[in-house]
Image (cartoon, rainbow, N blue to C red; front, side):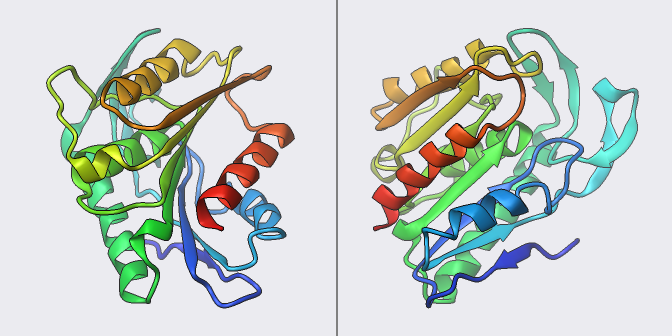
Amino acid sequence: MTDPLILEPVGTADACVIWLHGLGADRYDFLPVAEALQETLHTTRFVLPQAPVRAVTINNGYQMPSWYDIKTMSAAARAIDHEQMEASALQVLNLIEQQRDSGIDPARIVLAGFSQGGAVVLHTAYLRWQGPLGGVLALSTYAPTFNEQMILSASQQRIPAFCLHGYNDEVVHAAMGRAAYEHLRAQGVTAQWQEYPMGHQVLPQEISDIGSWLAEKLR
């Protein structure tokens, strides 16, 4: 397993953002974003993990960095490999615990993820982690493991979420991201939804909004 990329802040770290890349990308994908955010988040460490390389069914079995296999997809849903999702969630849980053991209060640890990485952090935060957490940033993503039977614990309900999506997203349609957001709201989570004039990508305005949200949560 490839070690995560770790960006230390200019000051002593008292907060951490664990940021997962999307399908086919790598741990360097959001390095420029992390560096830009650290210009104002002077005590926030960024941890950028790497997904393992595995075959992805929807891409004709091509091997690429992937948090889990996607077996089939439609405009409204994805069929995924749940064992691989659990393995990726465990990887994130281990990173949370490592940061906690290094002295970072879990209430000051934020999970962030783009697309497939966002699906992993939503699953980890709201279905696997028990305890305080600083929040979740869900970028251009969806929640393939959410369902009507899920019941969040009190601590999970207290984890705030910021869901950001492009209304022209041709890969993960905005309706899928909106469904995840609505599900969190229905479960009592304090969640925000923001749409942007973009496709399956990241815009400077979006990063600015994320910086403001992180500054509020980690001040």
